[in-house]
Length: 164
Image 1: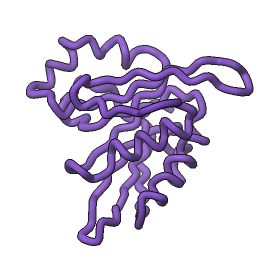
Image 2: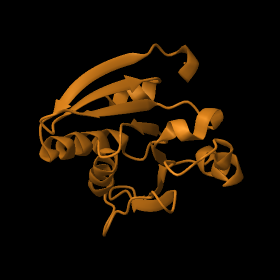
Image 3: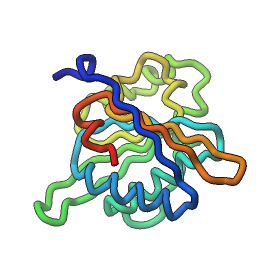
């Protein structure tokens, strides 16, 4: 079934604390494994997109400091599956600084998104229609009490499999 043929599935959850975000990230990482998923993260500045990605990457086995790619635009990572020894590529992209969606094409992102590996994308709307369809969209909204309301939109069978 192609992504375009998959029915949109929406699920809402709440994160009262960063520990809730971390628990969600760990569960998501267990489901991700070495998948070639495209996950797009939406939310205002300070909503917790980078925090979520940091927890996902750490749960996947990324060692050391996980930097925000706001200035670099992309941070690549490689993790090794402990059981199989297979290396998996991960790209954390942040298109916040794009002024024009064509910057995606000009910066050579087509090659990254055509290659196997996990892609975690903040501010995907800044890339316009250049991005391929997401498997999973994560919309994070900060509440007045600092908790987060999170809407998960699965657009593919893989995206559906990633839902909690």
